[in-house]
Image (cartoon, rainbow, N blue to C red):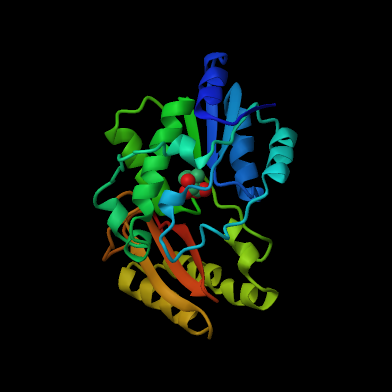
Length: 281
Ligand code: PAF
């Protein structure tokens, strides 16, 4: 396994590679979710590249950039074990050289939901993803559905910039109790983790209701809200039923939709989502 510690080293490694390249961009502190993306890339591509870069541009001033969990030696061992060919571990000044002034916006999609609560977050994501894709030049890039809005933004970005690659969305990996695997779960105490599980319960209740024939998005939204609000110490931000591509709220669930939720648990922001398929669709 090769470790590229700068853009120059990554470009050199890229030049030596032939055939398909699968790319998994990460902020490190790798978990089962990342592992599933790497495995999928391993199955589908000749060469697998993983990047580890905690991107300062996607954190707000009040957010956890400083304390975001990091463990590069452990990540490298996990990558080696998973059969990764190249790990790209750039420094901040490499990705944002002195004087860097270009920031990307995916208008519309970036402003809703997570974007409304985390101002500038998706500009940071779009900018770093475009930079990483430009350096790695993969055939396919793999993103988890857990960050569903991010996935849709990256798809839009790739289409808008006419990038010659495939964006692959991969299913959310869950703990046995249903909690979506996330690097930020380490911030939760055992007790808070118990409360956090209500997000998955709300999504399951939404799917159950749709399975029972409910077509009203307002009814399903109300069920999710009620479920989440029934647990003290969980601070609901949004629980919505949206179009899976535009993320606009829906009135009627008469085709595939997405239920999306976000809440704070002891100041830890948690998000989750699920596909809703109406009966007969
Ligand atoms: O999902 C993440 O880990 C990050 O947002 C990403 C895509 C690596 C960009 O920093």
